Image (cartoon, rainbow, N blue to C red; front, side):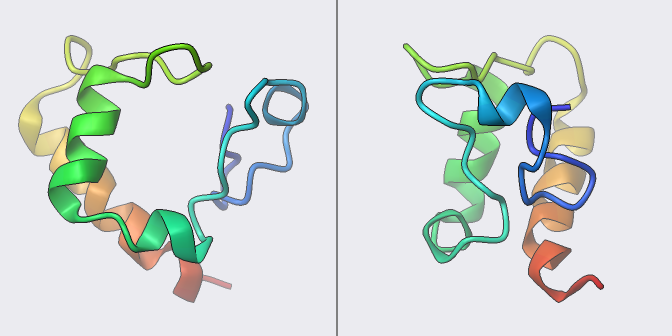
Length: 76
């Protein structure tokens, strides 16, 4: 909903957040380590629109999401 189906954040919600939701395909996001992505997904980011999802999904599902984020720049 926030980052869009392709991770490029062209959604109504993402465009209206402050600070804006970062595109998952950008170099800044892709340069984060897998552990950093896992932590952000699990714990959220204070004072932003990024909620903590750690209580919603299993660690295995979160690692799967990290792997998906890594592949987003290569998807057409």
